[in-house]
Amino acid sequence: MNINANTTPITGSLPGPAAPSPDNNTHPSALRGMRVLTIRGVTKTYGSGDTAVDAVRAVDLDVASGEVLLMMGPSGSGKTTLLLMLGALLRPTSGSITVPGRDGIDVDIAAAPEKQLPALRAHTFGFIFQDYALLDALTATENIAIAANLAGTTGAAAEQRATELLDRVGLVHRAAARPSQMSGGEQQRVAVARALANDPPVLLADEPTANLDASRGRDLARLLRRLADQDNRSVVIVSHDDRLREIADRVLWLEDGQFSQVAAMAIDPVCRMQVEAAGPTATWNGHEWWFCSNACRQEFLSDPERFTTTTGPLLDQVTGSPDRAAAPDSPPEPLCDQ
Ligand SMILES: Nc1ncnc2c1ncn2[C@@H]1O[C@H](COP(=O)(O)OP(=O)(O)OP(=O)(O)O)[C@@H](O)[C@H]1O
Ligand SMILES: [Mg+2]
Image 1 (cartoon, rainbow, N blue to C red):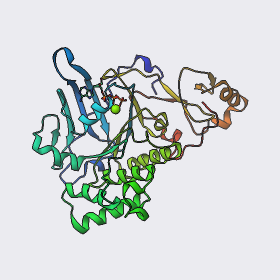
Image 2 (cartoon, helix red, strand yellow):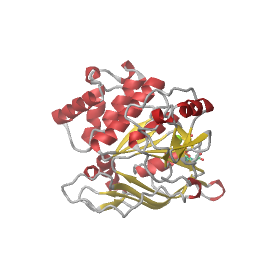
Image 3 (cartoon, protein in one colour):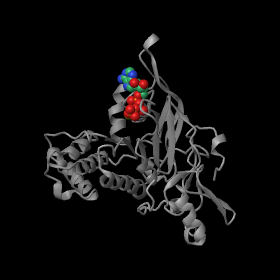
Image 4 (cartoon, rainbow, N blue to C red):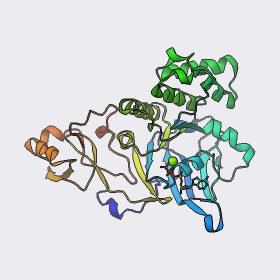
């Protein structure tokens, strides 16, 4: 645990050696905890001369299979620009973005020829957008099948795949519905199913909950968490939505095109919310514990043992992973309103 996160250099890199290339028969996502994305020195400058905007500046980042990575930051800090570059939808000005290719050889998508990019995208990435980006003229099934077509699955096989995925996101009964006939939450689940059409090792989501109410947003967040856990898939989310912290293994803060410092984070043992390790605090059993409010602190002090059997005090938000035992699949409703 990194209590002293304020002195930790921020790179977004995972500790340990680089992942070996998978053998020819191994889907990259089968390698749990392996790096599936390695980003080094990635910069994006829009325009040139006096009007040049450095949207992303020399970013390093590693993404492992099975992890949910949340990137947050103010508007205009470069989140979408970075996500688009990770997904080979936008070419960096400089730097490298390496993914394991299907033949087992690493590919730098920042340098790959344009004609290779559509196939790379189709097999490596699934995209989820704030506005769902479904085609209005097509049914739910057709929206998913058309994505399968991009990777060469066509006809009945594509339809079958679409049906399986609709079942997975709990929407098989809406297979024939068009986007305009579905709720926002349903549309976003269709968009998730579409993102899974080619079983990509990486899902990239830009503000996936922004148009959803609290309950639908939480459902969507849990679905993304399950897709990482059950399939060992990487999920990279950029968002302003604090609720997504609940499902994230790591939270990185992007500011002015670079990852910057975030405070060390802790789990309030009473309400189990993530809180900065900077508020009300108490020492018990050799640990320092942090709380969202004095009310939680008081409740804790009245019977500490009741609250400390399943959770440790700190998460390392910068480079490490939270204690998943402290962040269950179905987090309890916060008890306090902060
Ligand atoms: N196509 C473009 N041409 C020129 N500048 C751009 C372009 N796209 C983005 N920018 C600029 O790059 C910077 C980063 O934009 P980006 O959209 O990546 O931010 P963001 O963090 O996603 O913001 P938001 O939270 O509002 O979605 C901003 O200053 C923006 O104005
Ligand atoms: Mg954005």
